[in-house]
Image (cartoon, rainbow, N blue to C red; front, side):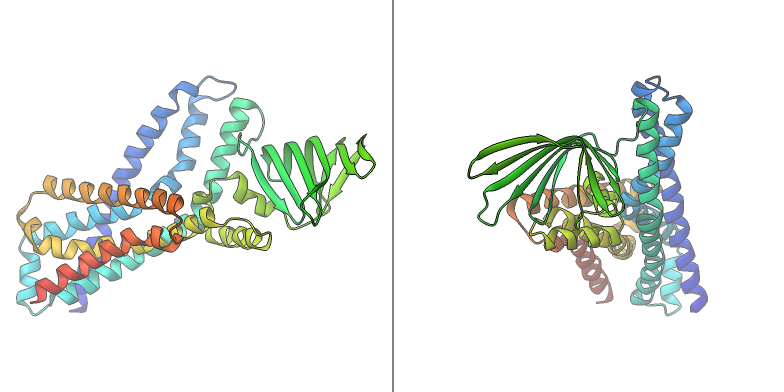
Length: 354
């Protein structure tokens, strides 16, 4: 039986890896076509666009991992069923539960692969892609063109643009008193991080006192607090591209400063959900293959896999939007589609065993 288990796992893994390869090829073509309009701007060449697309592929691949696992498993197990190998395994005494266990074992390996891509490969590749494109087109590193707000103790900081994690542009800093009234406002064109503190270059300070308002131009002004460059990455980079450890660190920072954490907790649970969704998708293929899919052709199995995969993606995105609007728990919004798929797979397997 162990040989049959390994054979099933190899079939599922082989099908999933083949589906991943096909998805990579399709993503490469479509992503590269999207860059055609920007080729020629600044120093952005065709080779630079290709490099940019290749660097973004790990994150795109991570997002499509559950669908690729589903399609690959449907193809692999479907081929075994069409060749009467699965019925022969059952005739030899291999139960549906045993087959499902082998499929889940393959799913765990694929889930670990997804986790490795999402934690160690995709985040640095995404940062390199953004930096390469920004330098080529704008001749500077721009992590994000739009601004953001942050809080550091009694300071409320508005940043127009993050040039990098250690350099900010267009700042306004509001310092409030215990009664919530403004004590001073500082404006500066730029700030950089040095020796554990943020340093503003030639800021204009407006102080509000009992005797009136005083405006003064300073050569420099600095502050040190909890807003460190490594935390700033979570502000200037899309949370979905960050590893779990960085999300946990920034969520802790937000909680210490009494700020909202829902968006980042949702990104955290989405990162957790992807490996679990990979396993759930594979489990769902077992009742599908023993059902009507067994007599279907390869094209029909691929179509079914794509249909279920897109339905899963759409439901996932819908619940994320609904969760943000109506304040649902982030864990529920991120994990509910996966739990529904997992429940469907378990229910189908239980029905097969009756």
